[in-house]
Length: 291
Image 1 (cartoon, rainbow, N blue to C red):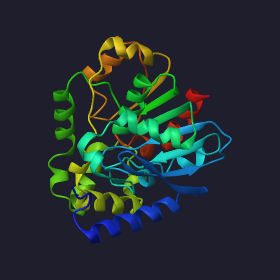
Image 2 (cartoon, rainbow, N blue to C red):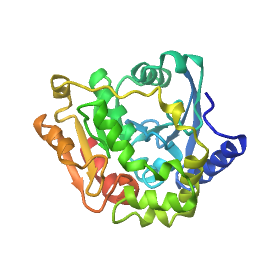
Image 3 (cartoon, rainbow, N blue to C red):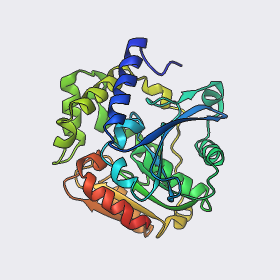
């Protein structure tokens, strides 16, 4: 399965990716890690002697755009490892085994092994929040603490699909520049101007909606965890949820967190793009919780 709908689209995305990455305003290194499921591209920043912080982006995003407002500050205290999800819209290249037998947990295991990291902090946004939460459950000995932004603990696959469809359709089906703005206003919060007024960020998002084949990410499955499995997340995982986030801030999702005594905070003014909308607040919350 092709990740991009055209070679021209891929080129536009990669060129924009690099421009966004340069705007991080921090020294970084791009690395490729070979795994059973293909080559995984990652961006590292910060002093390697600092505690590692593994970063995961959302389904239709990539590391360059996701952490553009967070990397500089977080790199002051952590060794950042921003991973492009394999099969996603970044620079990671899946192989045949990815399409046959992908397993998120094994994939992350292999990344940490290649980096010689036994224990790490983890943070993620949207689907990346699920990865952070899931890995903390599956590998509790490898995760010190995790921050899940714009995430929730779904109770069913139906809940996942209906919320996604309501949030992204019909705008994502007809990716024009105007529909990109409409989708941003639908998903963002009252402070979405930091996204909307960043021309490179908006161009990149338009390229992703127009040229990235979302079906390439379908191998990334969402597992529904039982309440007995969520106990291990108490005091170890913090959920940061935007006030205006229709994908994470709704009664059923919040009640699920409360019923399982999981830590969460509602961030005023933020939408689903929480770490863009309220970057200063989010950076502070991450560092305070992980310290």
